[in-house]
Image (cartoon, rainbow, N blue to C red; front, side):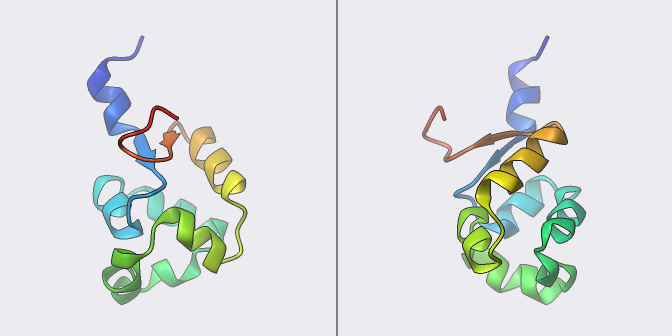
Length: 88
């Protein structure tokens, strides 16, 4: 049974910047690259574009269906939420 801290540690928010997501979950980088976020393999892209692009925006830019990203993250044990404010 989950402790609240574990839930927060395993939660990814779609509105967070890719940079923020990778700061909290560096292990997700390879997963995102596999899904098609290939620019993330370049550290300068994470530092620049990654700071202003959320996973939600990035999915549109990279033409990767958001539900595919969410499904992959969930299969890897993450809880995916729209935003830090919502309960979705």
